[in-house]
Length: 412
Image 1: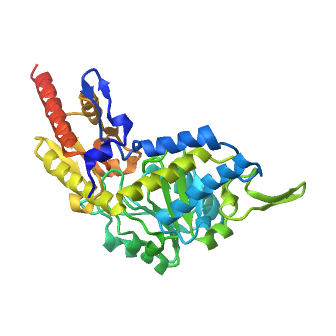
Image 2: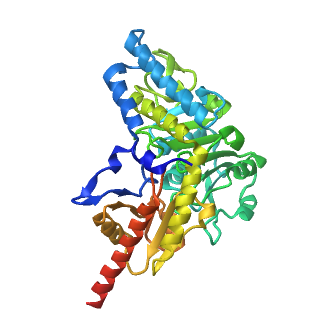
Image 3: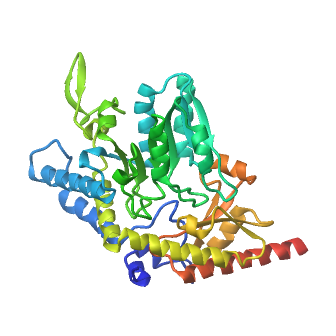
């Protein structure tokens, strides 16, 4: 693997006190990752030396900005092994990518009585767009159930897929349970009934190697801000033939080839889906984030997180009254979600913050999953390339302190 302490030197935000004398422990990377200096410097260099609008000018700065923007697209394409850069559409985040597919491919292809297949552990971003489409079209939503361990019930997939299924949209890794999905097998199952497959990879692309050609998926969405990149950057990968057949998502500059008073002709891929001035600096930052992760090696990133997750699961299991959610460490990504008997997750997060520890508390944009689990909220610690075992130990100490605080309150 890599030297974690050396990696930590790349992240300026980690070297601060969030309260006087209390150093930061950042365990909320599943919500948004911190940024290494390489990404910050790349965006700073762009704004200081290269900024101009892209694709529209022939002056030196415009050409330099265009080259930087398109270079980022090429690096992202290589990062997920897309067959060509034109199949990479820049968006603001995975949510926008999924909405784009629902609003364009979905409206053109889903009809009354058709079925849209999801799973019970989807993020709201991979639920609500399909709910909106189903309501508009009179289609039916179906949900693949989970096993008792919080994994997709593979035995149920074939029962739920049928010739009426138009699309199977599922997460590659649950942002609540951490469950890793057998993506290639689910894609193959969807294709066997003539359905297409969309993969919400917001939690997988930042943490493990992803190869869209090996997965054979039709669409794949992910966010830049979860993979060391800036906010406002995201990616939709799509098969060329599907993207070319889809209508544009928004109208305006850059998505057109020609406009007359009578109508318009759309531009080539991927620009058909990138109306208006794009997030140029954010794309540059995303390209730098890809370079940074490549320098660590995605296999190494995944191995480090497996080690940290296993350590965290074992350490947290020693806390009295704590219940871990989801499968064992070997079947999940870099997070640990839990509830602590008698203490609301928001109180846990508040006490942890007093100790300088940033964790997540709430429904994590997965209210239906929490309802299925019979809980209103949970606490989540999530890990990344800079997470260390001593940070996990700090979390455990904070949870022990929370238990003592509430024990004393109940006693009084």
